[in-house]
Length: 356
Image (cartoon, rainbow, N blue to C red):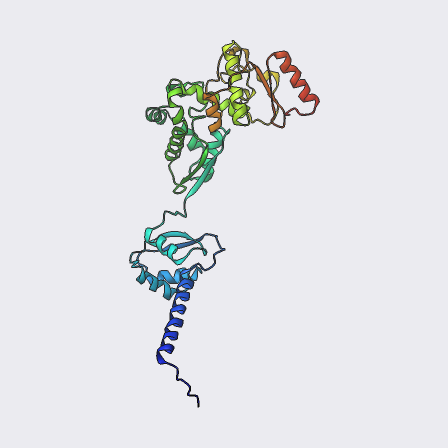
């Protein structure tokens, strides 16, 4: 006769403990894991001074950022996270509980009032003033007034090595034209001072040209002016370097630069239509098409050049070309003589590729 063995109590206890341990581990990973690993959208959460861990947990649960307020409090105890900083945060549902708590411990630099201003290459200072007026509590007129303020300009000249007395030439429309680095900038709020914006841009300019300091320090105004012209005449790094070389050939040979874009700036006209012969012949220290400008650069920059244009002004391509012309597709043709140049223009027009 077989005698059935009674289950051993220790075995039951072991299984019970094992099941309990597995349950705890699964629960831990669930409650510390992200609510939704695929949701990357930012959710703004404001933690105010004096809030308890339960209140913070409730806010996070209401925003569907954590699985449990109770486990949030337990996790804080387990990790000794005793100091959570009041601030405004950007969280995502894809964040783990650990990531959220670490952020709360460190504090946030996120500022819901922060503004962003984007300044594009090739635009004029008047465009930049307009951008500032649209994103801040300052008017267009206020911005331009400061940009022409002699005391402010003298302060800047003393502070930044690349700003010289050349920018104070009375023939220059806007002294800081061409010197403010095109970039996207972030500021605390709409009340940011105009001076802060301008100096932030100049600091970026200083960073951009630091590598060229030794070469351009004797005459930075020349390089910024050349870069501004080639910014509008060229379309990429390669052809801008070639165009700078052509301008240098023309100037050293007793010719004028003959840049159409300088005429547009002289007349403060947009680059949206062709100019007349009378307009090309206007006597103006910016207009390099006029015969009186033989061997001369424009009196100052005509737009804000980008990094490739600044690099081109410093490192031009040497060639025996003296002319260039672009078609409406942006393709640039180089020629050595006026006859070749005129023929190329005729070909472009005949093919229906003239820019206007």
